[in-house]
Length: 84
Image 1 (cartoon, rainbow, N blue to C red):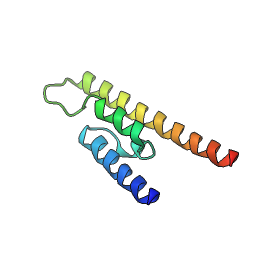
Image 2 (image 1 turned 60 degrees about the vertical axis):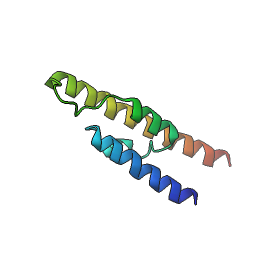
Image 3 (image 1 turned 30 degrees about the vertical axis):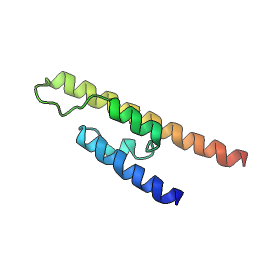
Image 4 (image 1 turned 45 degrees about the vertical axis):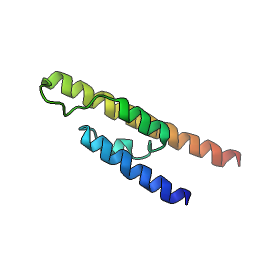
């Protein structure tokens, strides 16, 4: 059951990242509740009327945040398995 929930969360977070103009793969492993909440509140890079610099800034912020959360999730998982 936990695996199914994880797969659904990954699909939801990946879709939301794509709809905001971000790279879904950087958000793939940040698919926990924290990743979803952070992504939900990030500004969209696809808003109408954004200039190129603002759009690029939002994409960089979103992708960097997603990658950082993904790396933290992997490290946390490794620590949990190492301690068990």
